[in-house]
Image (cartoon, rainbow, N blue to C red; front, side, top):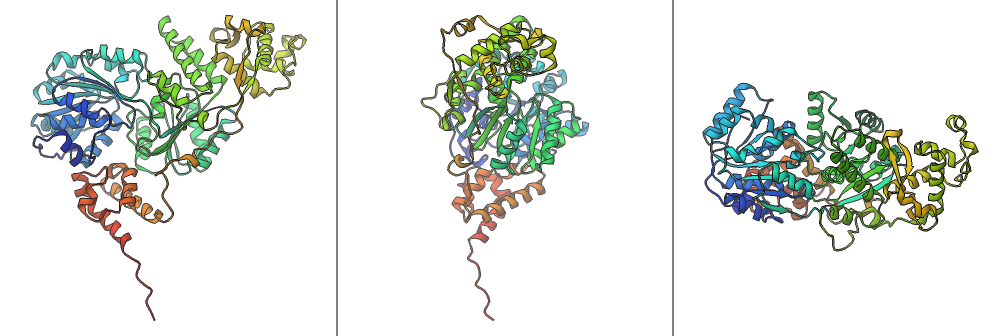
Length: 616
């Protein structure tokens, strides 16, 4: 952290893109955003994870005079972000509580002497009067507020310190500011702009589509078995993230996966900071690590080769789902987002929303977000179109890469079954949860049925032709569609709504989705460029081994040396000299100097014909 690069001469954004970061052209709105900031304007940027948000502030920070200040909510990730920049030849540093006093003082001196190009700060550190005074004495090129959705009190990652970042506009009115996030609906966008004084800023909203991610959602039916089948058949040895709602479930799932032979690590706020940092470090630097986590994990993670994200519980909003699934496939290679959910998730999240300390308006909005999430789960049409529509984006045609496109779900006339369920709910007094109502329908012999004499009801046993799983699927879909509601204040009792009357009277027919037998596999649909041929496998393995060796020698994660996509291009292009190496995407001047010769030598070794056997 103590060394620094000399200040670079003025360079164009195009030159920096090619020679520092190793890319030949901008993507999407990147150039317009960068030009806005270089010319001194403000910007609000919505761009999906993996869309290249970081370059939108890194390049203008390098192109403008002074040091760019990046406000990031995660101290644990600053070191990795700074290491990646330093590998590209950028004079970057961070200031946070992990530094010794002498180290922090040296970085402050570098800032004041104009020796830094990018400085990362947590909002808590930035807002300290001493830090603000320091920044006023320095030459600042821009302020970048990363993960800007943290300012929204509607959001799932709300951080109170973000609310005070409007002070940047007041104390540094001449310094351009950019706020960036991967996830925000219209309400959250308005809140970000208002709270950060960015109403006059240019707004850039990129496409939210991540076509390389295959979205798959399935009802829980022995979720451990479903997860194990998913991992063993499709993602053996791949890095991934598994999300659970509770800390206990995180711990038990990680332990169970370890017993199954997977390199799985738990991550949640109840673990010590040291354990969390160690598990995060292993995830970033080792191959094939699976992190089982609560939503405390993942924001700001810059690991490009995460091949899957699995949810074992229902996210409470589409924003949360999109944000978390977006951590897969940042390298553009095929990835899978698997969600398993059940009626118990609906009950739990409904209860959490009803008993939260927020205002009635906040509770109503939370319920609406949960309903939208449930709607995405139960639709029978293209999931990607529905997901993008939530963010006000229309997809011209079905995606062909989600479970409902790959294997359209079967539906059936569930009108009679729905009437039986509704009648049973009514006759049991609308006082019981789904489990008891289903027991009554199926003619069960339980203590609760005997206690309330429910074996005498006319609906007792009339649903014995369907399994408990099928009845749970019917109940879940009727809740999602608004025919039933879960009363969290009455022991999660299922209750009828006004909407159910036409069904009960036989005036409305209901088509519900049937339970799928198996989930569609993405293995055969991974797409072009994702598989290495048997002929190229030895070179691929050798390139990855060299990358790992160099990463360990430099004390950085492997992707800081080169992304998988860069190695794949090496396998395909087989560069023979430095000029051809520079043409590979992701290789700039600094990385060529540091790592180029080692990779060129390896490629040359594989290009030489094997020596003939000696004749004796």
